[in-house]
Length: 340
Image (cartoon, rainbow, N blue to C red; front, side):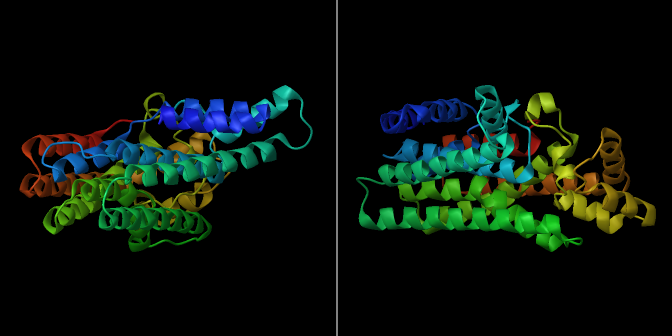
């Protein structure tokens, strides 16, 4: 990732020196993150190739991380988030630079426009890396890899749109919440990375099917944990405020279950505080109490445990090698029980 970003940074600097701060920002962003998607891709590739790492796997893994970076940058703009990974979000950093330099116009609008373009850079560079990763493979492998990548892009962006739409709708069903969960995050966190690795390693139909099922179960567990951390996590560990999801009115499965189980008074509080741009800490505390008192938190925790156990069972029964199975078990447990 560092090498790829550095190469593109040199190209941009040759266009104009005013692009250098953008490349420095991109380099800083590329140096951070948990690398879960990359790790699943590499594990999937090793499992398919009998324990060895096939050519191009590191490039495709890095491409996944750049795609994820683009999603985070754009998501932060849409959610008006102030922090990501313990630092100001890209649009906030660019707005602050606008003010520091004494530029004319609206600093916040400038920051959002700059962040959209930064995310676009990440998207296009991710595409370049995927192509490079499949160089040297036969045509069928290249076509299969591009098909998985294309499906991942469409599902993730489509899921993000449904998430934005859900925030504008007063009522969201558990089914709709699961659709958003699956396509916005779950499949592109686990399932698609595993399948991309499987394509690189020449996985057979049985192993690819196992990767798909692991992606559905472990991916959902990952996102459900993310939803819980988004409201109850420690900002010092997660790197982002716990008030954001409620302030933006995210219709997560956690929130949808609470809304269905809430009594009249609790529902009034949820309607008042969900999506309130001026949400206070007291309002957040009230929503937290409702999520607990309605049993929504307990139900989601039970669902995470069920999904994790099912995912681990699929791993143990898969045809991948023993070392890969151990690695996958570790990654799945990290997804389900993480604190950040």
